[in-house]
Image (cartoon, rainbow, N blue to C red; front, side, top):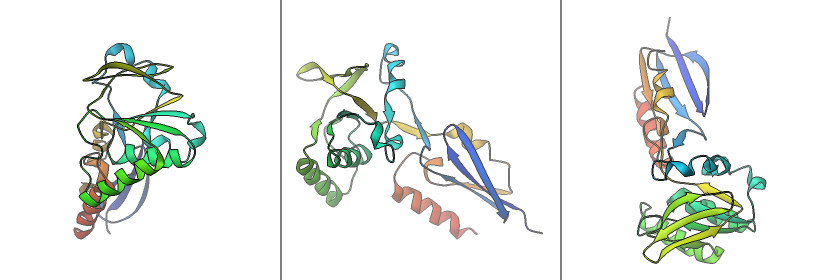
Length: 203
């Protein structure tokens, strides 16, 4: 008789699973697959963070987002979210602490991102750090000094990490357990697809 194939679906903070027949267990993370640690902010800002939204909680719940939006993080997720929200009539500002917006994107992707940011009217601040989040908005700091950005909604799109503790709970459910996608590291759909393909080759 074959073993048990357990496909664990990770949704913070709950875990669900379904079973079929195979000696292999593959972790498949979906949607709320990683967490964000406010290590870069002072401890005094952590309580107001509960009133902010994580980027992957926005899609499908755009009605919860206010008119003025500040997005912390100018990677691919933050950029696409800003373009999407401005297309719905919101006014988004991206705060990115490094020198470039969407720095890790491929050249053609990044060129397209920058074009659509301009077309959509998204404002961007680079080399700018978020130092505080309050009920009224976000305090940021860059070479020009500090400024306060008023916002109805603050969206966190930076610094996610894999839910390692939850993932490791499934380490002994089958003879061979393979983690894929964000169970390995919080990354992109490209990384998720590649790791899933590699896992499939072992079947």
